[in-house]
Image 1 (cartoon, one colour):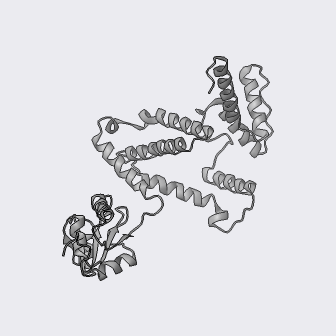
Image 2 (cartoon, helix red, strand yellow; image 1 turned 30 degrees about the horizontal axis):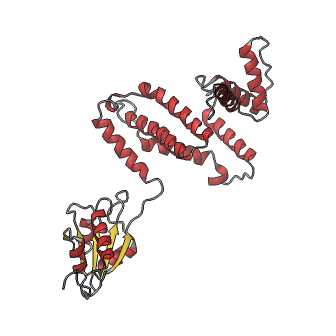
Image 3 (cartoon, one colour; image 1 turned 90 degrees about the vertical axis):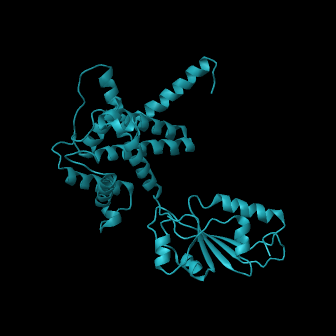
Length: 325
């Protein structure tokens, strides 16, 4: 009796999927139960990373790539066949089973998709690291890049991220976050090659994890904080202890946009409780400085406020030109 016979006895097909981002052999208990109870276990890829672990556990695995019809035939008599999926989950096989089921000519066995291992949150970051490794090794342009050469792209990507946030475009936001993340991974990959002081993306991630834990004692320690203001106090206190700065202006990057720089300096001065009068010199620059200090004192980001005003001005210009939106 074959798969095209309606009288064929049904059985069960289990398509077992695994994540390559999880160590081989770390399968779920339902997966092990299905494997141990199966009448036959198939895998098309003889080099599948799970095979050594399955065989070590006493699971007999046939290296075979059956068609949909052959797989249905293998289930005759109520047998259970487990297919250890390769690649993207055996799309050719599942498509064939779908067509066979839709033909109405076959009494199909029970079909089950059983994830045997799952990606943890952040698992795709491992893919990004692997892709970056290959690009760095094989791409003529990427293999020649340096930290200094890439610096301008970090600035551009940061501005494009801000623009996506201001536009409220979710798809664009996701893409720009990816571009910023790429800069982090790219620089980390370059840093691995430094002959004197190498570090990796794991060192970068480990450093920020340690910093976040240390600066959130109300989350990971015994301190308490019930308001954003108390959280900020914790953050500033621990940051000051870490940096051991001589001046409240230490650590303020002077290369940032002018309004943002002025607001940051004003914030440091206000937080430290200092009374520092503005320079008495007159001129547009000092007028802008005074506006930035005033904005910061009122809880307004002057850089963001100016960007909003500039966008409104741009729209007015386009309207005057008859361009509309």
